Length: 306
Image 1 (cartoon, rainbow, N blue to C red):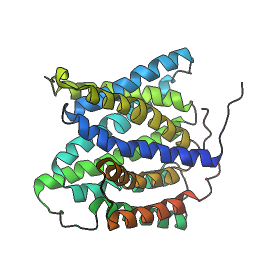
Image 2: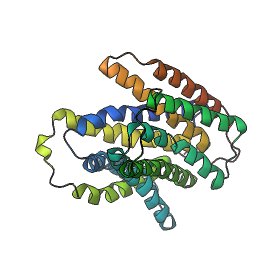
Image 3: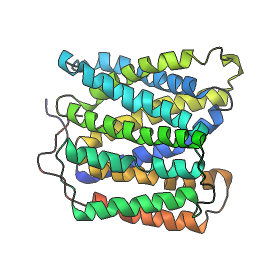
Image 4: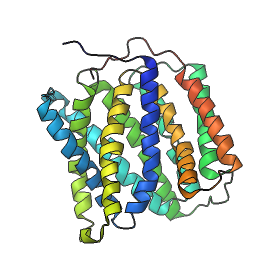
């Protein structure tokens, strides 16, 4: 039975859709954090995704992950699910919003470097320039044009370090996933990665007990379901599908759109006019992302089987 492939535009549209969903989660998580602790939210989020992906995997009889790839798969779950969520939540407890925003924007830089070192993907001068431009625009949006909130103290430096590790965790995850996509369908890689990450999140969630689940409102549960179905299952799947067809540096550039899209969504949600820095930074990010994404794919990039 033949496998259908999509054109380049479909994968770029998919990357945009994935980061748009992730951008919306900042509003969802903010709502649920008023009712549940952070690690419990992360566990429930990926538990929902696991309960959806598990039956689908069985019904469609997807190929199993071979034993020699179990360690790499576990590393994907540990970095892309467990460590990413844990480090981000804990880092934001101590890091200032300004320095955290800057350090979080380093994730695409780490991913581009790993893709160059480990995947042997060539990075052109235009792509490098696009990364720098998009990084500048992302920082402009996140800081609203001011570094007034930046200050140094030991506790804040510890938080900054955790946020920096978040970007490294995502870069490692994306690099490892890209190698697995050479051998397995994207849905298979996603499902097993989600199972592993959820399992690693369990002890972190148990450490937050006791939790008053009866106090969670219907809105809270609906937000958790959204986080599980769309932000964890659908968006991760779209990211994996696109990552199997485009260079990692190209996919990484789309991450810079997250603060821009988040700012736009918050503006719409709270009915506030965007600042001049948000608009200017958004345009800078879009131009940098376009410059990076319009480069032709590297020859020999792995082909996935949707």
